[in-house]
Image (cartoon, one colour):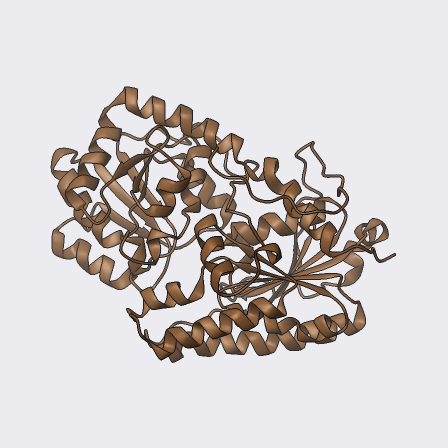
Amino acid sequence: MRYNAPVLGGHSHGVRTDGDEVCLRESSDSRFEDKDLASTQECATRRVCMVTHSFYESDNRVMRYAEALAACGDIVEVVALRSKPSLPEREIINGVKLFRLQDRFAKSGTSKLSFLWPVLRFLFSSSQWLTQRHRQQPYDLIHVHNVPDFLVFAAWYPKLAGTKVILDIHDILPEFFGSKFRVGEPSVFLWGLRLVERFSARFADHVILANHLWFDRYTTRSARTQKCSVFINNVDTRVFQARSRRTPNDKHVILFPGGLQWHQGLDIAIRAFKKLHRRLPDAEFHIYGDGDMKPRLKMLAEELGVAASVRFFDPLGIRDIAAVMANADLGVVPKRADSFGNEAYSTKIMEFMSVGVPVVASGTKIDRFYFDDSVVRFFVSGNDDSLADAMLEVLTNDELRHALVTRGFEYAARNSWDIRKGEYLSLVDGLCRTCRK
């Protein structure tokens, strides 16, 4: 194992090791009241709120934190988005109380303002919600997840009242938006994002970074090393686990699940698939996700004459996508190394490993940092010929497939969330040195 996230002090939470969840998912409707968790509240030691401008049911990182705390008896609430109107505004999922404050807005364009407005709206609504909720039942900890960094200021009132605040950097913002909007140096836009980054870091009591490369950069420009720690997206083996195929399939199914942004390199993957398809006519490329590149990717598949074999699906919740991944023959992670993707950790690599599916991945700086050729078949980033050759080799070489699956599964088991979640619980203990009775 190449990395060790720092263990931060405090007493033990007494983590459960039986693997059972606190409770099964409960049906709920608008009659959602605190009495739903009355039995949990009687033994709870802390009240924690997660704030995220994302869909909780498909955000594995937020879900892992929330369920780990709930399993320890803490009262955990999550403020998030609603992906579709049919979902309830309030719901209990595995002991976590979920509040969907805002519906997802269809993006009207690719301008900075079109992305900023929904986020600002969520900042104001979550700030108001946290203030009212904290006055009624004070929180001990608020854990805020970016994007964006400034969402941490939604916790201004609880912070003034003494509540501890964690800022979780899923994506390092100046690099993320610089890549998204193709903004280079020098830039007033990037300067402003770095300023927001520094102020957000100062406001938080602790900052979590999603990988070690970003830790080094962030602590150089925005926060003290002692104030930060690293928690990569360790796979949750309760969800992502090896299983047999649901139905026999005579096709070679290649799968990509995730955001459809430029830095993910899906256009490269589609071009590579066209070349693979000539040699494996029964191959199919399944893409699960959404993003601003989706219309252009569909158009590209049409132009290349592979639209019938490149199939696009809507995003799925974590547990549903885990079953889909387990049914694939090959996982592909085609990120660009000349963009934000070069340093953005690929959660899906370990998820594929954990369900027993071999992975072909771009040789980015971050993925070369955490993985090697014994567990991942790398290809030259941005090179569709190299990607096509790598996919063909893994799909047709049984010995290589077996080696990648076996070693990948072992790697994922060594680095699972179940092994490492104690470090997060210790961090929470260190911040919340007193318990509410």
